[in-house]
Image (cartoon, rainbow, N blue to C red; front, side):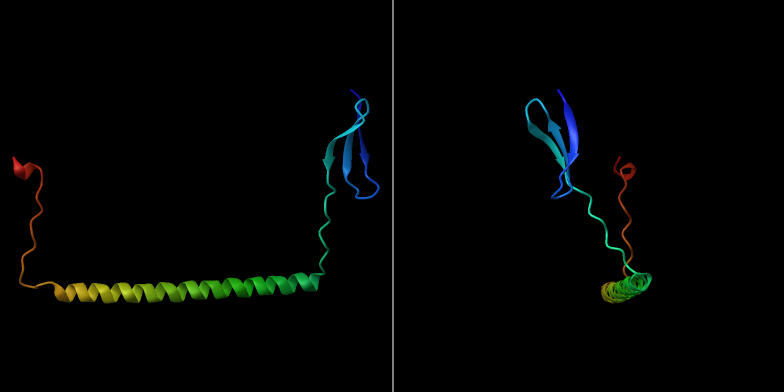
Length: 98
C-alpha cells in the first residue's frame, strides 16, 4: 500500500493518506506554539508564585502551631485526670501466664 503524508493547508495538521483506498489513515494535529512572554512579565509571575508559596507556608505553620496547642491542652487535661498515688499496672507478658 502506498502511504504518504501531507500537510493540511487549512489547519496545518499532518495527514497520512492511503493512495489505494483513497482514505485518510491518520491525522496529527499541529503543535501549538507557546506564547512568548517578555522578561518583565515572567519576573512578575515568578514574584506572584513566590508570594503564594510564602502565604501557603505561613498558613501551614499557623495550622501546625494551632494543632500543637490543641494536643498540649489535651495532654494537660488527661494528665490532670491521672491519680498521682496510683501505681502503674505491670504489663502481662505471655511468659508470666505459664
